Image 1: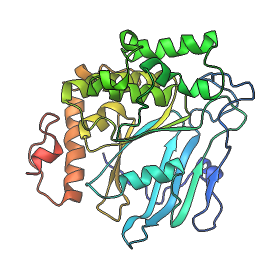
Image 2 (image 1 turned 135 degrees about the vertical axis):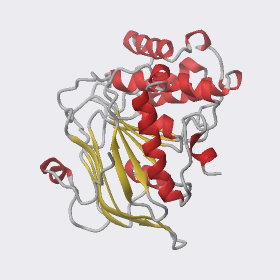
Image 3 (image 1 turned 45 degrees about the vertical axis):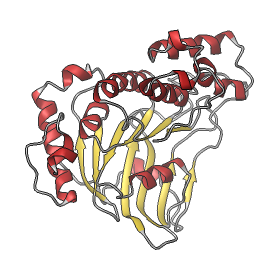
Image 4 (image 1 turned 120 degrees about the vertical axis):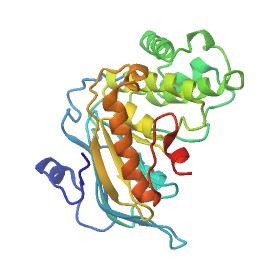
Length: 319
């Protein structure tokens, strides 16, 4: 069942909210590595714990210099270790929302709270963009280990073991010495994801990073993304047009309105922390959730919903 989160407040939310000043951004901590530059323990006792609020937007609005109003009075809560998928009509402000969460943009009004921890050893925030941001002169192995090199610990045995384990998880071990131009599109997207998770960020922001891939490749990467974010307890916000992707990867799906965007509906995803994503897509519960999401999105698209399935997708059903 859909339920609105607009106006909903809890003590945990109040504890992490920023000050009342318009456009204020509160960030608890500015350095996600410890003094010795060690790789973090996913169970770092100094950081936010499961159930805490990691990210919160309260009454956030954003207006571009051109006068275009992208967001209006938007509320969003992301708890520690959870994955939230955000879907909505094209051009409704999803990428703007993600940039505000990342701290790349400040809201025109409203409050942003980021529950991070300067005492912990984990990196704060990583982001995977729609466009390729790989460094063409570095090999696959060097890309994944680049964060460690910046912190002058790329030669440590621990770092080498960590990079090797990520390459194995992402199915890129045999391509460790390859350069980006030698990889397929799917491999490049998988590599971009591994580069983002290599410093074990507390928060991972994904801006439609797999939209350019064919369905079989995308589904294979989805399983890697799901397994890695769950294994290391990474709080994740995924912006996507793909409702099957949203239902597969997330704990919650938020549907945004047309621009200026606010939250139209919120949906819990009941599939737990252990998922075979290929098998999941054959289950009745998954198909029912997909249909519910499509009905909610179709209201914002202002089209009459037809029988949408994960294979046809929202765009096809809208034609």
